[in-house]
Image 1 (spheres, helix red, strand yellow):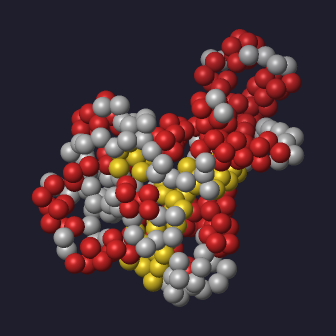
Image 2: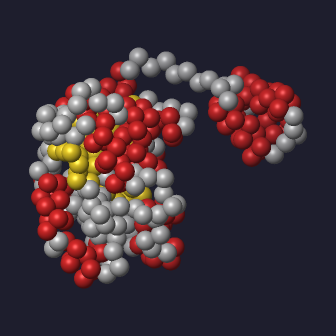
Amino acid sequence: MEPSSKRQSIIKAAKLYYYGNMSQEEIAQVMGISRPKVSRLLTEGRQLNIVQIVIQDPGTSIASNEEKIKSHYKLDLVKIVPTQHSSAATMTLIGRAASAFLNENIQEDSCIGITWGNTINTFVHEFRAKRPMPKATVVQLVGGLYSHSMSFDVRDVAKDMARKLECQYSILQSPMLVHNPKLRDMFMEEPSVKEHFRQVRGAQMAFVGVGSAYYKDSVALQANFVDERTARTLSDMGLIGDICGHQLMPDGTEPETFFSRRLISVTLEDLHAIPLVIGLCEGKRKVAPLRAALRGRHINGMIIDEVAAIALIAEEHI
């Protein structure tokens, strides 16, 4: 289909849908195309800004939802940003909100913990320090993801944050998962590793991602730490999400698995001791793992988008 012809098809479908209040099935019959094709045209209409949806919201609903969530979970911080037309654009707003919070609250000798994840990576990319903080320290909370299939590495994330703050950093020269529990125990006894986690225990705040345990979304699978069969096994156990590599059940507890015995990461006990742990996540698909993180008290602050907030409020009946 020629670009001009396709654009006209998008416009026609959009007018029938938004102006004519017709269903996608009805539009398909009128235009002589399939219903999935109608759906794709409507999606492209939004992506190409042919269709621009404006919701007249004075901002009171976001403020109200922030207060509802904060009160319900007894959190220290809740920040909700407007959901954008794409996940990337929404993560950018979350990253900017996290950047503003860090700039406002960092102290000269702050120790800041950080993990990995697409939203965390976006946050560090968006961060612009207001001023140098040479006495501050950025510490890596979980081992690295050494795989060409991943678009980020927590070592680089920690280094980039420290570079922007012009401060010190401490990284873990290890993968997130090692081959067996004995190797993990030996590694944790190394003096440099002990010193690293001593610094972690001194952190005043941490920014963490909240991951899904669904096997296709598993970071361990994407980073080639486990094969698909093993990832399915973990998912079939009823695991719902992960935080700092720790696999969580819906109630926020971490069951004993081969995964937990091989994990090189901050312990949940030490994570809980950090005064402010802020979860950054975007979209409805992250609501289930976010609820698990909240129920386990693994985070006491969050910066999320409005769709995630609305879904969380609905599922918790707040």
